[in-house]
Picture 1: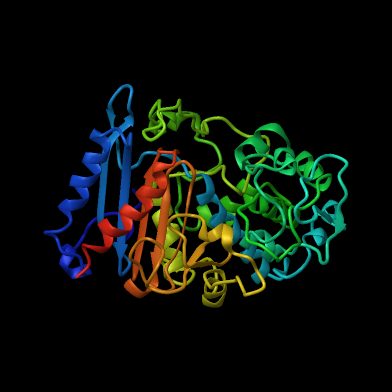
Picture 2: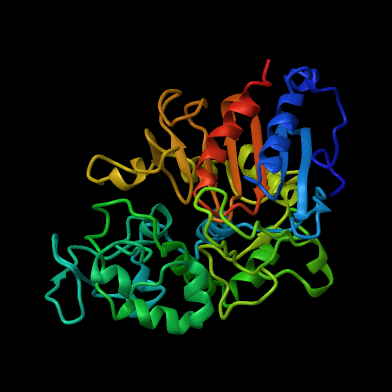
Length: 404
């Protein structure tokens, strides 16, 4: 773990507003989850008022060998890659090289003049389409209103789309991926609907086009190196493979065989939607930077106003947000630039504060930042099945019950 205020518990929990007598509840529940084989292992870190208030590791790095979980374990963070890429794009925007409300086609010309699958149509090959009323913008990519999707629905058009960022970047180079998308109609008119999508993978390629280097190289330059996120990248280095966590062989809910993206193998492009690897300590530094309104340990990444912009709700009444409400822990949330934004203390399936923002990974990872409580939390686990939605709600209760 890195040498900084976030590198060790240096004060009593009470000095940071946590009740030490309630912290053991976290250990008890996490150990119970491991013993019930609902989790292979996990790492949790809680920062409050800019200092590490609590950290714990439970279970196994590898359930088969029962090697204990270390706090510096490396995880595939899946969609927790998305906020990293959004910050990279905002850095370019602050430098005047990219504009958030510009058409994506300004940077990736093949995505101009899109067509749209008409409402109630199946979207099969050769089916009629209609013209897009407007072009998708960079903001649309960031807030999942571009008309793109992951190919996970029942329509023929869904089957024509890649099912995940991982599958897209495994099959194609970045240029081939854009060619594939350019040949497909959008699912809906840009801006009209929120739908989780490949938009952040496209955003990563926008960053590459503007920055003139790979996404991984640019993130290393402007984010990972300045923030001392020394274990964050797009592939686990060969010498660190022994720290890479493994998942359970079977899903604890369905009993089906369970697969996990292999973070030790490089993909054909650095997918901004879900291909990074990191540790709890590294990602906590990123989360704390967001909480600090763009700065950490004297290093400024973004301006205060850019952080406010990123973490504000970008969904207006003109946008259908029913797909967002369908997530069990997101009812009542809005959406900012790559992060869900809490609209009020109520709803959401878990306690929190208005203005709290978060996102998670399909591998079982999760983070949230609560500016009202000066709180940043990172949870790392390789639990990719449906139980991850339960764990997200469980963690809010476990962490917030410790606050004075």
